Amino acid sequence: MSSISPFTKEQLIPQPETLEIQKQKGQLFIGLPKETHFEEKRISLTPDAVAALVAHGHRVVVETTAGEGANYSDKEYSEAGAKISYDVKEVFSCNLIVKVEPPSLDQIKLMNPQAYLVSALQLKTQNKEYFKALAKKRITAIAYDYMKDEDGVFPILKSLSEIAGTASMHIAAELMATANGGNGLLLGNISGVPPTDVVIIGAGTVGKFAAKAAMGLGARIKVFDNSITKLRRLQEAVPGPIYTSTVQPKSLLKALMRCDIAIGAIRGKDRSPIIATEAMIEKMKEGAVIVDVCIDRGGCFETSKVTTHSKPTFRAHDVIHYCVPNIPSRYSRTASVSISNILSPYLLNIAEEGGLENAARYDKNLRNGMYFYKGVLTNRTVADWFDLPFTDINLLIF
Image (cartoon, rainbow, N blue to C red; front, side, top):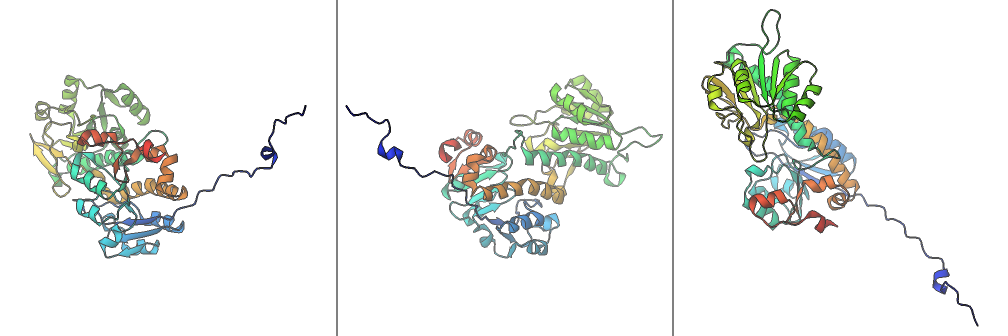
């Protein structure tokens, strides 16, 4: 009786080892168009970022004068290795478009089918036609205002909020000057002179940086927010004693009556809640200043209404109101550097992973920012807002 071997002849033959195939690095062809949105002066990539991308073998086409609003010249971009184009069609013919504001419908028409777009989404200002145009061109779009980092933070939104918070105090200081029709007070703590009183509604990133700026100038600060956790974090972040409170109408009214500056920095789920009523604002000091940073979500002062950089203020009940929704654009160079510092590593990583699709497979933070994939809507918030069909991005990429 013959014995049966547990191994077949084929199993005994040495088998070739399966090795992981090294990812092929991709070359990016980036178009950097000039921003055409009203009073938008920022640019998404600085010359330094362009130089880093070119050094890694990528091509960048910059529309002429695209960086002028942030005080970057064509020469600086050219010396960084970019091609300066006088033809907007050439810029939008690149397979990856990087912008600050979302492209207009006319600009989408200039994009190549199946191109890639990285820009803000700004859901509140969009309409169905915008998404239909992206779908028709089968665009893959990433909203940097939806991108999260490894800590679950929206890095670009947080950075721009830091700018807005700090800037709100600088703006208020300018508006209090006699030459600008203010009450003539200096934002600070001068020997023998009572310090300026500041009320901040909201203890998030904007509120925290507004408080830090005011504290640095020696102002007396009161911060109101209904989140004890945010108030506690703010107290830990600000170096000095600071008054904090939940939003109690009597306490808030008393604080507003005494303050010289009031900052609105509280955001709601869909719109900012109205915290300061018109009756409260009527009792504020003549010449006091309101800077409503959350005006892009409706504002938290009942008397607020949207203004522009060219006409930034109005008076209501003898109180100066500043309600410009895009404060970081006022400091376009700082804001451009901030956006560029966050976007450029993402772009370099996309190339290292062999393209945007491969990068999205391994980077959930990148997937979180993707709201269109080859013309298919992949963001549930957008789908619910505009009543559009939605497909989970994980079902398309994996």
